[in-house]
Image 1: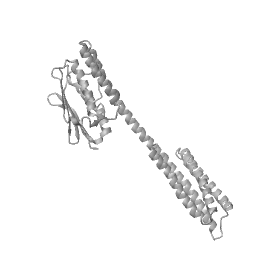
Image 2: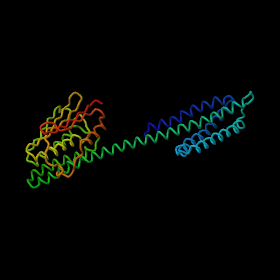
Image 3: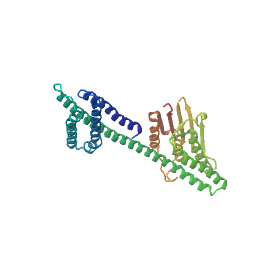
Image 4: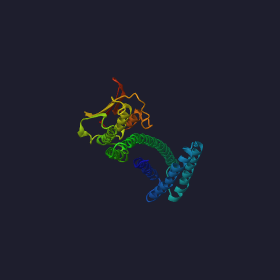
Length: 343
């Protein structure tokens, strides 16, 4: 429970006893004069603080919330009778109350029973609502923790996919030339930097996300002697360092395009990536060829799919996201992500 709600719960107790002190002062004033009035009010407050917290901290959680309603009613009634009897027997004797007027005894009894009933009823009500609120708050917190763990799991699954591809590429390049291998290691270091420092953040800049995409594209180009048809159309470059997005979203979409386009394996394979800002909308688009070969042999990893991407985006943007991903004419696949940046 955060400090805000803790403060409100404490304020309820303070506010109640402030009102209760005023009630006791004006009801006791009918029978007593100062200084006996002050001592009487203090003694009643001390007694009722004990009664209040006995009901609030013990009876409610141990009996009412445990569904032991008869026991709760019985013990609350005992508290009411004992505290009332204690006041009825001791206050007149100790503070020498004035009962000269007619029906003054009845008024005193009425005041005592009313005050003790208020204390027990308020303590019961606040105790019940407090515990029910805490239960609901804990359920909500658990739901948020579960959601965050799920997002972290999705993000953690994104990283091994392209990392395994990268290691396979370096392994292949190591048989060709040392220059390619050193360049591959450089690109791998950039990807590892992205994994370690960026992928765990809530959001990163689009520039950081594109840096990882460029590194992955460079690794593929090195593997296939820069013969791959991978084109980038990045507009509004001044926004790259300003606009922020959840990490690994663009990268995963690009990696899925690499996997399913057949690029490097088929001569007509291609990938086209476009980025732009139109008014307050971020547009990210990928068009790629569709391979006729099986893609499961690449790493043995079948990818996350678009559902995970949509889930992450909805977590951060709600209904401000439009996602389109399907096959289009001429045996091509088109993925469009549109995010409204107005919060």
